[in-house]
Length: 162
Image 1 (tube, helix red, strand yellow):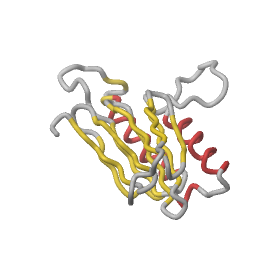
Image 2 (cartoon, rainbow, N blue to C red; image 1 turned 120 degrees about the vertical axis):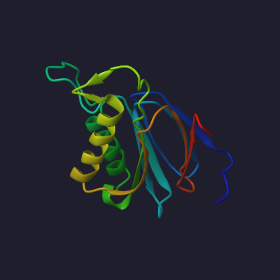
Image 3 (spheres, rainbow, N blue to C red; image 1 turned 90 degrees about the horizontal axis):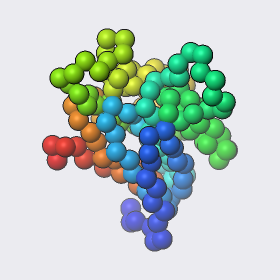
Image 4 (cartoon, rainbow, N blue to C red; image 1 turned 30 degrees about the vertical axis):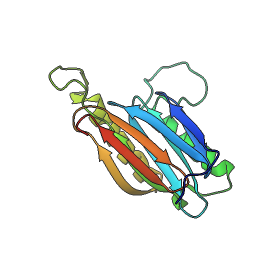
């Protein structure tokens, strides 16, 4: 499918998400963070979130949903889908990221690297929301560059080894 002209290009920073139409390209860079990519092949709509941690710490006093946390980022994405009058189960979902950025250090919570925890959370959230996961490029060592072209559903992944 041909790239639209003009095209909306969005770069996600950690904690951000974007949902858009067929004229949209979404980019991000992931380390231990995870992105969930949602695409509706019939409507050519889609979105991406970029979260840092699986969930918020207990006792946090922040109001509203926060895209920095996996469970809240997926809720925000589902709200965007409902705003379009669609059902989340109609979307194809892919998971990216969760790399171990410091394999030689003990930067870990609960005995596991944070990237692995983020990936495990993504898989659990996909199951709990009865979503259709069609692919993943997760864990390993290092970062990833993602480019999601909503008009085609194509996600390009570049790693440090590329």
